[in-house]
Length: 144
Picture 1 (cartoon, one colour):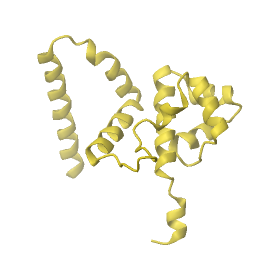
Picture 2 (picture 1 turned 60 degrees about the horizontal axis):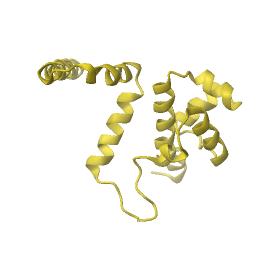
Picture 3 (picture 1 turned 45 degrees about the horizontal axis):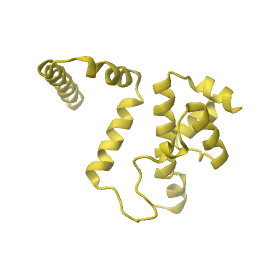
């Protein structure tokens, strides 16, 4: 792979921070346009931040944290601690990606809000079985 191609890939930390911005924005029910307006940006710039295509400066991250009502450290939750040098294990990294991907969809966010309200464990497992069956069916359809 050439350096030029490699240079176009977003930095994994930028992708992570952007995903956390998106997740928090969606949790608060704020549109990209609203966030952009409050930051003096275009919604396209917010999109680029959320994809990790553009890096967020320290001052802009501070403003985003203030607007989204979280500490700046929120955007780095789930990353390995650079000071200790300890990397997150593969299972933790995978779980973080899965949760982030789930919560950045409107349906995932709504499911995350209402699922815990299902009081009976048996019913929650039945819902999970249904979703698994639907996902398996969709996978089989894609393979055909």
